[in-house]
Image 1: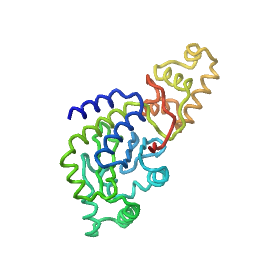
Image 2: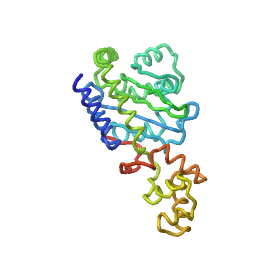
Image 3: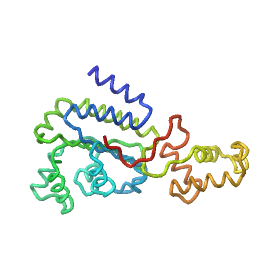
Image 4: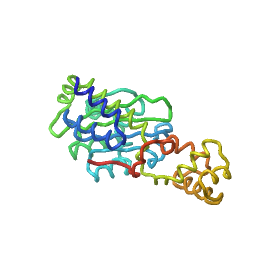
Length: 262
């Protein structure tokens, strides 16, 4: 337990999403879950995560699987995705096998189970995190190592579930505080500065003086920021950049990525 407390402190003090993810992945790997998938969005709508380019998607799986799972939209066809959108907490995947055998899954979910089984993805655990906003949702999927059965996962969870939950929750809480590691094009330093001044209520003329540029250049920075964030108005750009932790941050913004494979 002392080791876990130390790890929680390290995650809490980490300065980047990559550092948080690496520490979490190492801990889960030692528990028998080397393959992890994590996703978080602030733009959820009903059962949709919104624009995938605005979601944080991290994985320890191969680049090929990341492309298939996240960008190909396979995650949305799995029964654990349905469970995640409707529940908060943690569950092992035993119920998936039971519902599949009983014919209780939809055709697309049953096909997803078969496709996963074909590449050695059978047992595992899903954690669905509680969120303060109905538009936010985060979850962590932990795929059991090859050879581990549902019984093995149940034994691991019974012995270490509390520790694993604590690490997963700390990881999630830290990630959502850091600049979002998303696929969308990153803002430049000047674009971020212009948006921050707009958020402070400054006019174009005020911002031009503060930044030491022309009004036309300020408008250019704001236009490019709107394009990078895929919004129509500057007010929307300010709101979206704030939600994604892309403005008013102390740490350097990461390179835009859709998933990180290690």
